[in-house]
Amino acid sequence: MSVCAGKLTYTGGCEIGPRPIDMHIKALRQMGVKVHDAHHGFLYCEADKLRGCDIQLDFPSVGATENIMLAAVFSEGETVIRQAAKEPEIVDLQNFLIKMGVKVSGAGTSVIRITGSKKKLNNVEHSVIPDRIVAGTYLVAAGITGGDLTLKNIVAEHISSIVSYLREAGCCIDLKRDSLHIYGPARPRSIDVIRTLPYPGFPTDMQSQFVSLLSIAKGTSIVVETIFDNRYKHVEELLRMGADIKLEGRLAVIKGVEKLTGANVCARDLRGGAALVLAGLAAEGTTVISGIKHIDRGYEDIELKLSNAGALIERKD
Image (cartoon, rainbow, N blue to C red; front, top):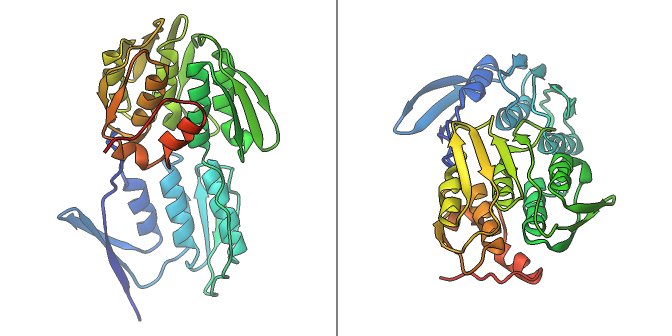
């Protein structure tokens, strides 16, 4: 009998609140993995084989759903994931696995089924779907500046909730099959309430960008963050720029001001950093953003793309 073993670190990424991996560990244990207590930040795992089983997730976690799907590929028998995440990235992973010869179905619904196999997987080529959060960020850039922008190579269905709120904020949007044309308003309108939710709801990864947009909107808006505990770090920086935002736990009350003013601010996380870039585009004067390593994790050459669209933005060493 052969035993496979390995060690892995705890999750990293942005500090936006607790990111427990208990669902991951619970699922792996159900599949036959022995997970030992962490030592010096590492988890130690071993298994002689993986077995398919019925797994009920406590929350539709994207990472847990993907991890279970991958573990199930070479498990014995069928694995069923209930209350699975429905994000487009899950469907894209299923399409990739199907090309490789894996028997999997249900991605995009709450129940996914994977039949394990001992067969060698096929070599394939696969194009990853467009990044819906990057697309949404550039759409907000047009909305916050009153810009005129065309995005190509998008999947309209993936950004429908983002588009809906942008229209509510006064943006004119013309959607085609794989492109989108947006005209930003002279000044955005306020939005009564935005509540972050798992897909197909409004994505938590777009909350920060919309807070920037609504900070100059006409009227008062409310944003409710339901996914992460600590996703308002950008608010303190927006206040430096003249925004009027009050936080009450996971709720942000945003009274739109006529203009923001450039300031020295710091990106504390990925999407919060993008929100500060957007605020800087609309602000009067110069905005200097430090901590851009966070922004670079999610946006390739963001300053070049925005500069090509007419923004006055540059990267300094």
